Image (cartoon, rainbow, N blue to C red; front, side, top):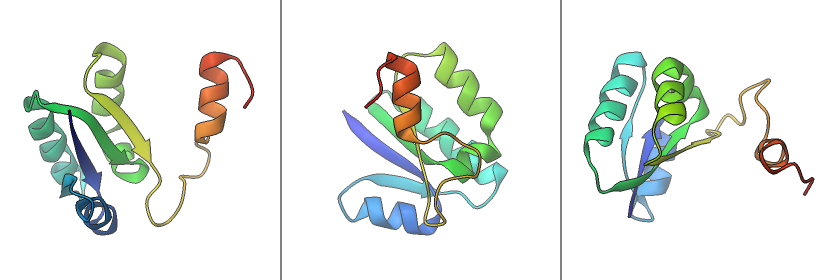
Length: 101
């Protein structure tokens, strides 16, 4: 199973240091192109995408997340921190499993 990161330069560079391939996306067009290309690769098991890049293509990310089982898409904060108003990982897990951790 392979991982892939789509995000800003810092995120892609950081993940690249541990062997994760990725694409830098500075705008909607670059984000759409990177997302479409990685979805074509059936070896990819997890797509990591920064929250701000995911917001650029929210319609595509949400449509894929809610209709496909694989690969797993994980949104992470970028170097600027979490996007204002988005629930944190702990809150999402609590909501998903109904148990506070």
